[in-house]
Structures are given as structure tokens and as C-alpha cells.
Image 1 (cartoon, rainbow, N blue to C red):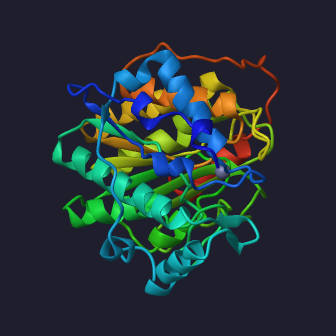
Image 2 (image 1 turned 135 degrees about the vertical axis):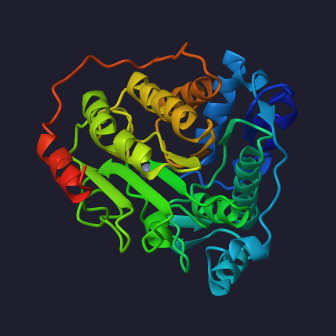
Length: 355
Ligand SMILES: [Zn+2]
């Protein structure tokens, strides 16, 4: 891996000390990579390049990155899982399951992703920041307590929620708009009435879980499995009729977002129909809801997204939303196309949630 392939980290300054929107990033995220795998460093190169082109990197405040401690990892993972990731990574290139690779940087990258998201979340809990975006790799939402899955080694969003709970936050909502079901996060909290987990994802896509009937033992799991082709119109309907009313009813003290951009219509790994404009609307709606419900406390963490231009525009638009801006970009566009009718699905979820 040639250093010159990557932007010099010194070139990517996130340097607005007065900003109320934070970002975490570490150059090690560029080193967990495999050229024949869709979840590779080039995703990040595209995002960093776009943030620099737009000047968004200078509009946000960078929070120091740091590895999660073993004690923190054990908040959501077993000791044997932590040891397995560490030793597999220590051995160099290999796979923990058929989809999930490691290299010699992976243990550090995953620990730093988790520790950095924890610190960003706690900065928002303390009120040092209003909100933030964790620009991290690998993704986390498929990682289970005892095994790696779906490109994910440690479940960063679950670890951040547990750290926030430890810091005194009683009620947390996690919204996962990645095209794949956030099965690891659901498993972490399905018995916990103080965490509302809501996932929108494409039905029957990997990992195959996330049926509407999976509501958790406490009824605080909400799954919305969407048919292929569901796009901006479907998301506007289900946010309006399901997600926002449930957020208001649950009244969380903060919102964490598993922000996956693979719901974009151009994404090679999924078949949903969102545009960059639709994804920007989702971000803006979540940020606005956080202002109305929980003092603006909302933190996004990067999950999937495998089309470089869609991913980088998606991250840029989420940052704009967090900054309270509406100058969203849609470099790919997409004419409105007919979307599947999801009214029966929305009615089913509303009935199960007694909305
Ligand atoms: Zn995904």
C-alpha cells in the first residue's frame, strides 16, 4: 500500500474550533483495506476529497481520535471476540467470515473507530458539541457481541450507546438507514426498553433478518423491510407516518444514527431507490427532529455506502444538515420513478406499534 495513494492527513484539516458540529477521523481508517473488497479505503478517499473540495472540512471541529479501551469494548463484546479480532489482525491478511476481512491495521482501525465515536458521543452528551459525525471505517452495525459479520468487527454504535448510558443518558434512539438490517445493534438492545432501535433496510438483503414482526422483547425494536426500488417517496412516507411519530413518543435524550449510504439508487450492493436529495432530506429531518425532541443531541456514524460519488455526496449532505445548512448537492440525480406501494407495510408497522 503506497502512502502516496492516500491524501496526506495533514491536508484534511477539520479546523473550526468554534463549530458546534464535531467530526472524528483517523488516517488509520485508510489502512484497513483490501483491493478486491467493496469495503475498501477508496470509499474514504472519495469522501475526504469531497469534503475538501466543498470546504466542509473547514466548517467542523475535529475531535481527537483514540482507541476504545478493552473495558469499553467489553461493554458490548465478549473477551473471546476481542481476542479473536486482535489475534487475526496480528497475523495479517485474512478473513473472520467469508465477507469480513482483516489486515494488520484492522484491530487498531476498529478500536479507534469505536473509541472515537464514544468520545464524539460523550462530547455531545456533555454539551461541548451540539452534534457530530464519526467518519470511521470499518462499519459496525452487523458486528455481534461474540463474532464479526458483514464487514464489521466491533459494533461502534452499540458501544457508543452503552457509553452514553454509563454517562447518565437514560433513553437513546438509534436510527439505522443503511440498506442492510442493523442486526448486531438490534441484538445488543432487543431486550432493553430504554433503547429504541429503528432500522429501514431492503427486504431479504444481507443479513436476511429485520422482518417487521421482529419488535424485541420490550417492543422497542422497529424494523421496516422495504421492497427493492423503494426511494425518496417511500422514505418520506415512512418517516412521516412511523419514524418521526415513534421518536416523539419515545422521547429520547439523544439520537444516534447508523448512517449507511448504500440505499442510494446507484449503489452496487443494494437495490433501493434513494437519490442524494432523498438521503439529504433524511439527514435534515433527523437533525430537525433532534432539535425538537432532545436539545439537538444527534450523532451520525458511517456504516455502508459503496458508490464513491453517492457516498461522498451523502456524507457531505449529512454534514450540511448537522451544520444547519440546506445547500445540498445531488451530483447523480435521478428522475422520479414509480416506487413500490408500501402502504400495507406502513399500516402493519403502525398496527404493531399501536400508532
Ligand atoms: Zn449496508
